[in-house]
Length: 147
Length: 149
Image (cartoon, rainbow over all chains, first blue to last red; front, side, top):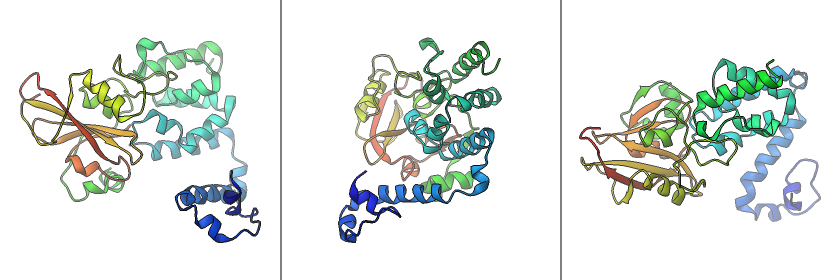
């Protein structure tokens, strides 16, 4: 993060001129997004701070499903901020991801691989979402999270 | 659903379109454009594995997409206008050149698209241009194997 980026975030102003930041015109949208995220996190309501892992997962999963529903890019879907937050939940998210897959197939494969470091899907079943789902559910039953 | 579609794709507001299939997360636009509805095609990283034509580079670039469809018999062409003896696909890219969507022309001249994990629609080609998918960067064609297919 550059000094100019920090200048735009509340609490990091160091008295530098506004024009130095404004000059980075193409960078402006990114800075505003960082600023928004910092402010959002800072003012996170107490109710959200008390979320259970399931509530957090359900909120993030709903956000992700809505925001990426017209997207085909696996990279785009998997790098969406809500999806990344779910990966950030780590092992805590594992049974929740598998339970969601049990309810309905969806593209949780990147997250499952990122959290576990394994990929139980044979290359012959690449892209077959139903079979990819089955492979992960089988893994979950054999390795514990769904056992 | 229609208001949600028109919100995501403002071009649909002023043109005729129709939903032709319900939402399904098991296949996507890239597979549907090639005539398949049983797999999700994308040149994603090796893990997780997704389908992609064998021999095509697993890169999210327009040349890689063009190479993938070339393996299926498509070749670049100059126009999106209907040529009855040819089947056409159109590749949309974001402003940075990254492919976002692929659409296929029906024998009627209209285009069919699978919209991510959502529905299939029949539409005009430019109706999907905009914030969500960017714009059409390449049209390719291959001879129709059977008239009307």
